[in-house]
View 1 (cartoon, rainbow, N blue to C red):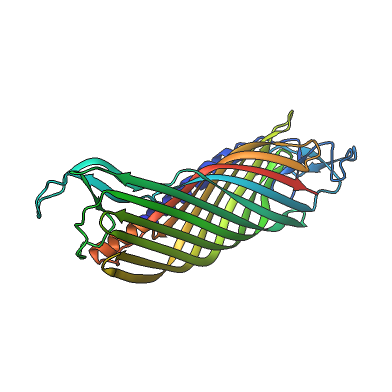
View 2: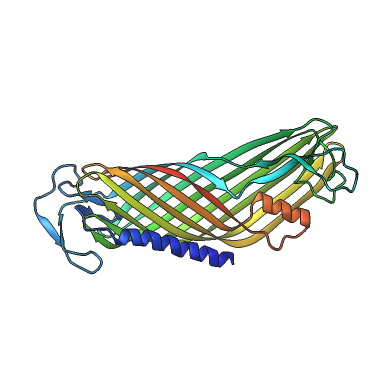
Length: 368
C-alpha cells in the first residue's frame, strides 16, 4: 500500500510540474545546458550580444520558430541555498499526567496534556557546483546539511503524577510515578547528489531538462527522556540510516519577457538502499540497566523531492535569486516513535513510516 502511495504521489508531482511547464509560451531567453536562459541582448562577458539572431527550429515541443541570440554562454554554475524546514511525523509522545489516586490495576486517567517531543522549523543549507558538458547538457554535485532539535518538559504536583509513555511495559518501573520529566528529540540529515542534466525541450523563454544521477543519504535521529522523583529513569534511542542509490528527475524554468522575473519547478525521485541501525536503552538510578537492545535492518528508502518557486535574474543572466517551497518525503523509514512501539510490543516485523521535511528554500546562484 505504501509503495502504491509513493508511486501515486510521484506521478501526481510530475504531472503537476509537467503541466505547468508544458504551457509555457516561447520566450526571449537563450536556452543553456542548465535548463534556464540568458536574456536576449546579453551574453557571457556581460556586454551586448551580437545583433545576429539564430532561428530556433520549429518543432511540436518548442512551438513557433523564435529568434535567439548567438554567442558564448556561461560554463560554470555555483549556488548556495538556505533551508528553513520542519520535520513531520517524527514526534514522540513521551509522558502524561494522570490521577495519582488510582489503585493498582486501574486504568490511568489523563488529567493534563500529552507531553510530545515535536520539532518545529530549523535551519540548514545546500551548496553546489555545475559545469556545462555541451550545449544541451551539464553535470554537477551538491551537498545538503540539515539539523533540527526540540526540548520538552512536564511537571505536576501531588496527588497528580507523571507516567512514562516510552518505558518498556515489562520492567518493574513501568508503572512508576514521577513529578517531573524532560525530553529532547533531534532529527538530522545529510545528502550528497551527483547529477547529469540534459535539455529535451527548450525555446527562448526557458526549457525542460531531465536529470539522472546518484545520491548518498544519511539520516540520524536521537531521542532521550529523563524522569525525576526518588530516583532518575532514562529512556534513550538512537537511529542511524546510511545508504546510496539512483536519482531521477525533471526540472524547468520559465522566464518572463519584459522583466527579470522567472518561475521554476523541480521534482526528483531517489531510491536509496542502505541499513537502519537502532538502539533502545532504559535504565534507572537504583536498578542500573533495565533494557538495552538494538536492531538492524536493510531496506530501500524512496525519497520524493518537489519544489516550486519564483525569482529574479540579472540582465546578463549570470546572477539569480529564487525563493521557493519544498517538500521532501522519505518513505519506508524507521523513526524513534515507531521503534519505541516496536520494543514495547516486542514486534519488529512491520516498522516503517514516512518522514517528511517541508519548508522554504532561498537560493543565490552565479553563472560564469
